Length: 639
Image (cartoon, rainbow, N blue to C red; front, side):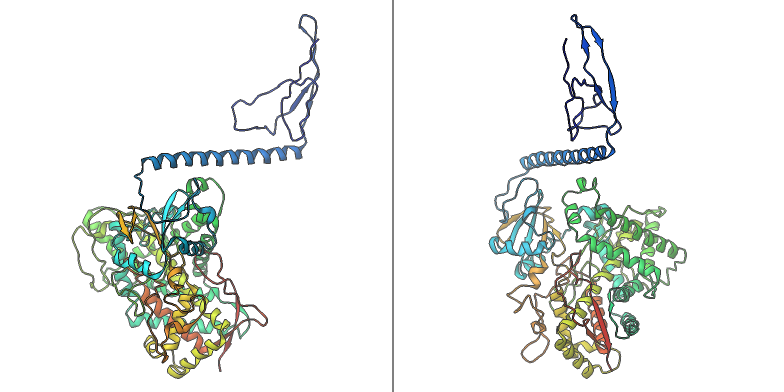
């Protein structure tokens, strides 16, 4: 007589029963052990065999597993499957990296940097909350041009004003592209103005510049709009009667109304559902952009697409934003008057009609899967440090979107109302004026017009509460120069101290410390190092605005950075919060006007105080832009 000792299934409390026999095997091979939660554990009693081996008797009993035990099994198996997938992906990436590197030419004169690990590169060395701080520390060892590996991708970091200026001005053409970042490319399908390249970018840039001039900059009308909105903001703050409140919503709405007037020709009350919805979508995405998972998405998008995380919420919010833009321009198209263009969308629709005439095609409406944005700073004609190039290309102070780089013919400038635009060629850029580009462009401008000016104003109020003696000096100058009349843009040149304070708020706040990424359009030899074509380059604005060679107290709030010994305003060439060169922001003039008129209007009417006993925290929040943490304030009306 013989007994069989075989165990069918291993459980967390595996016990080898006497003579169990395999009852059921998985139908397919699996990675690791796998249990079917619905399967019964069959335990067979000893089979009794005669001398010839013939089975004489066998009894089988069934035993159901404990439900809690099944739950534990499910969790263990689920984790094992996930680990197996992750390990498989890592192995595949490693082999792909080895294969890719074998096929690549070896460049021996790349900028120096820390030695990377396989697959992850230098990610283990980075402070993912504040990567720019890690880069600054590394620059002390490796110099102002260094190589960092984001996973398997080489990225060049530029530190310090001299290095950044050399790259963006002296080598502006070579560094003029934008890299494709996964979260934006997926969102916009490479449409829009900020992250686009090639002829599509040129067409959208020219249109943005000319239209902003017509509807947003250099006109008394826009100054009047800002002054009117500043008065609405003052009245909203007065309604709190000096009691504590969070200023984010009303500040955001006031600033948003300026860009909305340019894009849509409308204004919303601060509690209107439309503006609250738009601000909610944008603000949530800005917060999510700062998360570690979203930062990692640009490095391993394929893997993270399979996993839950905040990136999915970003894409959902972007789709909602797109739908709003689509509905808006669809309605405007029905009432479009070529001879009476009301706003930027009208101007774009006129360009679309030109495209339709040129191509003979019907312009349909198609919405891409998602829109996107990313932080960016702006610059252009600035009397205090900009490069003075009027052919800039970003949007009013900042945040970005990727664009399609279509290699086609040179485009024409957009035509402003009244026919002031000049023709620049028949085949022109009208081919790029499709609905996908309109959706992405308007999204760019929405985010740019709302986010960073609001963030700068929130820094302004927080810093005035932190430094009440500076607040008093600003108010004294306002009382002396402006009095009780509404502030005007022309007052600025007579108010050196207030001007210096506003500049220092921008420098200290440092809204986009990482800077907008660039990409080499060709092989470049820069400062003795070879940088291959298609390499992502980050001009670190944090390192510029905190450059000890140009700012005496770079980590302090010190308005004297912009004042000479006699108290006159002085320029500082390293002040480039809007960046410089070909990729600097076209909306700098508008942004500067907004900051001056909003700031002086508030300082004229209120003294800002923190809540009694509250600590004023100047440590920035973890988000897509470098803004202050949420805070409450008391706006005390000035008598």
